[in-house]
Amino acid sequence: MVIRNYNDSAASPAHAGTIRAHTVIPKGSVIEPPFDSAWGYLGGPGRLETHSHTAAEIYIIFKGSGRVHVDGEFAEVGCGDIVEIPSGAPHDIENLSDGELLWLAFWWKENL
Image 1 (cartoon, rainbow, N blue to C red):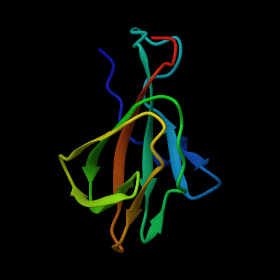
Image 2: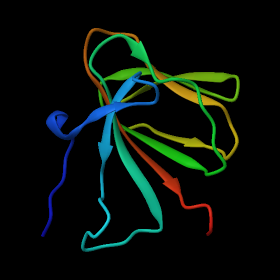
Image 3: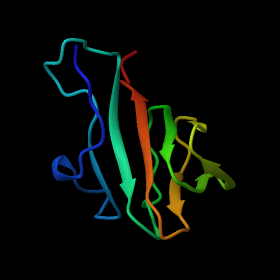
Image 4: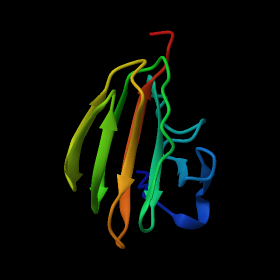
């Protein structure tokens, strides 16, 4: 059995330093999923840099609340919400509070 969770000491700046992140399921793990994954973390007010990529992506909000922006639309999100992000869509997530915002991001490998 392997149990994983967000560990700030394992995280590093990502997306031009706008968030802290680390891998959820590292290479060489017991399973080799058909997707890549990362924890995303904002420890207070801030915003992940807006970006896009060719892979579809899902965010699962684990702690806190914020606002997600996807392809010109926005929505408030909180713990338990799942956000589907289509491939090619510009997107980001924003923490509007002084509290923590923690999410998991999963994106599918492009060769599927």
